[in-house]
Image (cartoon, rainbow, N blue to C red):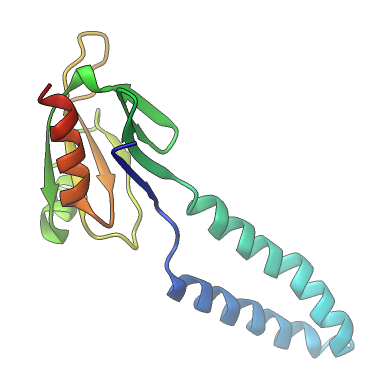
Length: 149
């Protein structure tokens, strides 16, 4: 494996989720005894928030064994024709005003930088993949290392 990254949600989301659950607890505690409120909120909202964050943050990006994986999608590196690291502003533009509706996107709002991977496959109309990452230069380097051979 030349590159591997999990797009986990940041700590600040967990803090905000905890505050949301605490707010629900305060609202429920007014109507029912606080022990019951704590149990209800912990089960209903706490587990729901945690499950949502864990599910949303389980997306992986990896390069290895002849393939690029981004979330549930994967493609042979034989179809990769280049990659470019994008800063926050370029990511915003490429994901927005300059976007191609045929592109594959794996974006996370808490990751501002990304990599655009150019795809060339006669059987697939996707022109590029836009992938959020914490380490865009490392991802580009891994793709360049595998596609230069």
